[in-house]
Image (tube, rainbow over all chains, first blue to last red; front, side, top):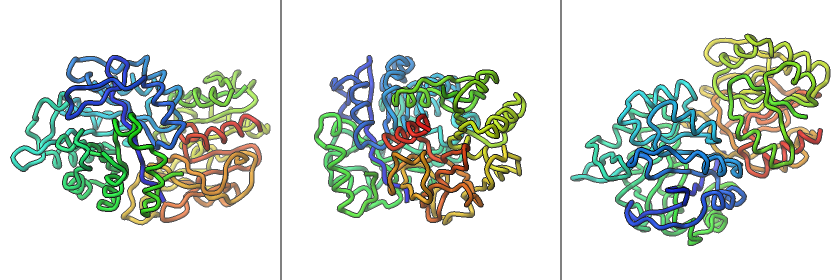
Length: 252
Length: 202
């Protein structure tokens, strides 16, 4: 059977990997090419390469860095940040991306998900939602988490999947950077309404958090994190050993 | 020289990078003379069967591939490229394939348990059925990366390896010089690179 996936996320700005705490106060970690190679040669199951400032500063993904990353990566690579039109899909796909993650762009351009899915296939289109609780409801945020769209996150995700998104990344802004565990309540709500792979993001601080995620939500497909992997707080190989001991099917 | 058929589908960047990693420069081309000159031919493919076979027919590349395969030149299909090698596909209607391998391509929906997600996306284990030089760097239980909604069936004659997604799913096939894999070797880490190297070494 399909294994549960462990996915390091490389948030990139100015050609360097950064990781914010609740999206503020970002720190430099290392060269994306170096990190990507380390992960691809190691036990990571996939990589997400995200230009975190693209949406705010109207900047495309740095295709040169992307090309360099893609040359050394022999596992699936998802690219996001600044994807607004079908032509942005083309731009990153020709630089070696396998899947394209859409966030703000899908809200600004409601036809984007459907048009891209028709052209490149559902498996290529990932909807990535930054979600935060507002008065007890889950809202979708855009512009790197700075703007509340007022949209109900669960309905929004459901609609995107209906239009052809083949995978969903759910990033809990409430949990992001807190290292207190994944947002089980939010992730369960999403898993209950979609039948495409769901990737959990935000909140991982320890190996136990990944065990909790896969044990509590058997239908979740993957756990994504950044700083805990980049800083070596969690070694993916060790994490997989722990998951295996706890009965979670992972790739050796 | 390995020639990769460029017919407007598939991620050539990853194919080129992964062959480069195993020390092989490939020629990505749609030029018939180049394909005729090549030692081996790789047929990639992503997307819908009907579009892909249509593009091969419109350019006459379908006949060229059949001729080259019949002459004994090693031909490998990846993902949709593998599916194209079979007699027919039932992806949105019925479409004729290249007919180089016996078998057909059918939807996974209705075949696998309905609770399972389709497309079948992710890392899954290989179970080896038959020995073949293409599998020389591959061990029983090795994980490879799949992304597909259709699968090849009735292909016992060429079946090399399966994966389990509730039911057995054709993962790799070969008959004489014609071979293919459903998974993406260029995205399957060292296991996939080993297989590409084995193809280079044939």
